[in-house]
Image (cartoon, rainbow, N blue to C red; front, side, top):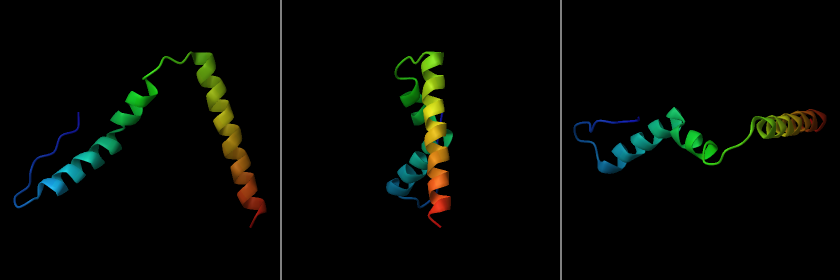
Length: 66
């Protein structure tokens, strides 16, 4: 659970900005998005494999383009 304490002479905007940064850094939102739907282990492996292939292709493309 991310929490922030109001500092002396701090505006509500900067407090909110700090809170949002903490939430993003803690990874709460990404976890919620990931767990929104059930994904079987085989489906997860297939998606991860696709991501890895895409990542490798992107790296090779940037190296040849230099």
